[in-house]
Length: 83
Image (cartoon, rainbow, N blue to C red; front, side, top):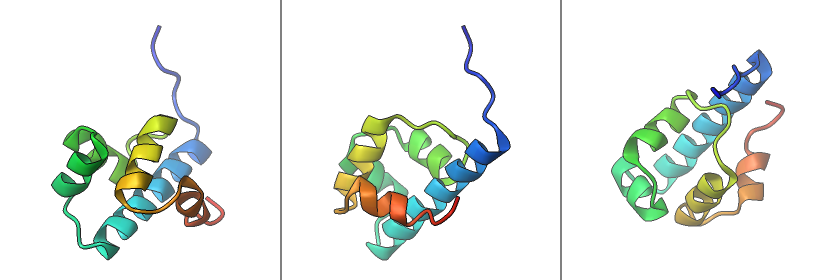
């Protein structure tokens, strides 16, 4: 069974999440390699998230990224605005 296609709204939220993750990473002067390592996720997965290619990241991935960025999931979600 394949994954269903993301709706335009889900793709927009995925893009907003990627922009927020990148903003927070840059704010902390971290490279993608550093963040991926700190979060324990694959570098290509992080790149895909930041580029908005993944509309449905796992909750555990977002939690790991939040911890590595020294923030909460709630703070990341708040940074998404109305996306």
